[in-house]
Image 1 (tube, rainbow, N blue to C red):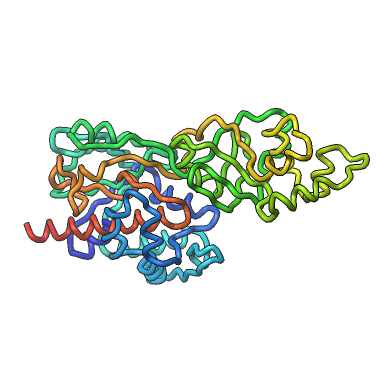
Image 2 (cartoon, helix red, strand yellow):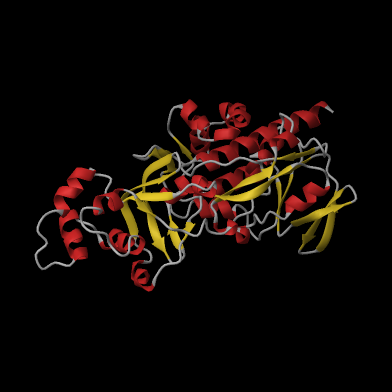
Length: 378
C-alpha cells in the first residue's frame, strides 16, 4: 500500500522483501478464506481497536471497510459479505488478488527485490543480506513495514525491535494476540484432537462471545478462543458454556430424568444431545463428575484450567511494537527523521474478522501518502 502511494506520486520505489516471494503472511491469511474487512457500522468498526482507536480513526476514515471493498474490486476481485458480516473475495483466496496487485505495482515501476533481508544500519545506510552479498542502501526516505513478532517463518520475527530501540525509538513489549490457550490434556483427549467445540459460549473477564473452537494437541484454538485471548492474557479466568441454547432450569429438568442402566456420561449424551467433543471436555475439566444436581452449573460455566496462552510465534498477530508516542501524525519516527513505520509493527491489536487486514492496509496507505508529500515538498 505504501509503495503504491509513492509510485503513483511519481517517486522511484524499491521494495525489499526478506522472503523468496512476497506477501507470505497475506497468503496465509487467505488459506481458509481471505477475510479482508467487515461490513458493520463505522463507529462499531473503529471501536474494535480499543486503545488504538483514536490513533487509527483518521486512517480508517480515509481507507476503511468501504474503501477496502472498492480496492479489491479495482483489482478485479469481486467481494461478498458473509452472514457474520465478514467480507471476502468471491474467489476466497489471497493469491488471485495478490497477483493482480503485483501486476499493477509492476506497471507503476515499483522495483521489487526478494531475499533482501534488512540486518540493521551501517552508519546511516540500511544494510541488507541479499543473494549477491551485503548491500548498503541510503534512500531519501524509508518506510518500514516489518510485521509483528509472530509466524517468524513467514517473515515477521520482530528482530527489528532491537535496532529501533538502539536508535531511541520507544517500544511496547510484544505480546500474543488472537492466539490459542494451552492445556495439558490427559490421554483420553487424544482421540478428540481436531474436533470442533460447538455450539459454545466463552467468557473471560468482561468478554463473552458465542463462537466455536477446536481441540488441538496443545490446547484450544479457533475464532471463539481468539476473541477472548486478550482477557486471558490479562489474567481473567476462562469458562465455557457448553449448552448456550439451554437455560439452567432446562438442563436441570433433563438431567433429572431417570437414568436407568445408563452411565452418567451416556445419560448426559442422550438427554442433552452432547456430542463427543463437548462431553470429553466436560469429563476432562470437571472430573470427577459432580452429582446431577450440580451438573447444570458445570455445563453452563465450565472452568477451563489452562496453562496460559500459546507461544508468541503461534499467534495470528501481536500486541506491542512501536509506541504511538514514538510517531508523529504521519507515522514518521520522531527519533529517526525520514523513516516511517506502518502496519502490524505499530502498537495496536484487533480481533480477527477483517480488522487486522483493514488496519494494515489503512496505515500503509497513510504512511505512503505522507511520505510522498514530504518528498515532493522538499
